[in-house]
Image 1 (spheres, rainbow, N blue to C red):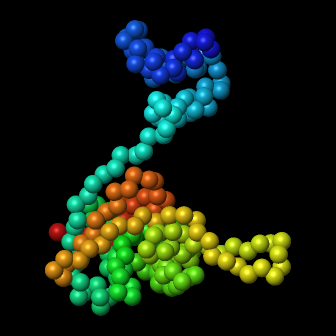
Image 2: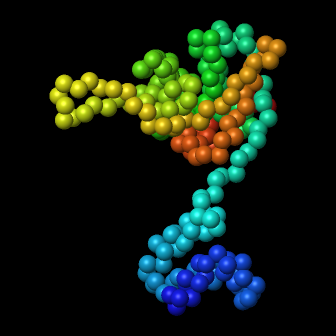
Image 3: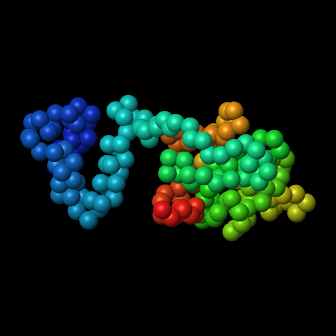
Length: 211
């Protein structure tokens, strides 16, 4: 049985099994796993699913990259006065900031717990302008969407806290200006971002006008 299972996982078998036996490959593989591993089948199926999600050369497949058209969200004069605005772009809620002559756009909900970033304050940390989430004070760089935090070496009593990055946590979108109009183009980068979880319809914060 184990030999049969191993043969199923061979790349050449992925294409020939359905033709030879007329059985959908996932169902056949699940049956073989259950018969051989018994109660451990769930764990093995998870590992096998990961294996099948990879290319034949062993590299993991990237999520599909989508292309979005630019959407006009308002006038340049208005955002320069308010210094921020919210908009729905292709059914995704974003917040646009105007800070020190530069425009920045990101998902409206904080990556940590879905806090409303459009209600937060902008402060500089380690020389980088950040939006501070009003709920839990998480700090997100306007330019890159990185989560910043302070760390200190507990073994060194004289050490001073230093700012570190968690990496990109908030999805950043592109802002352009044309003839006085502000346009937002959603990020088409295929990597998974923590803020994607709160960018669905279940967490909408912008009130739609009644018709």
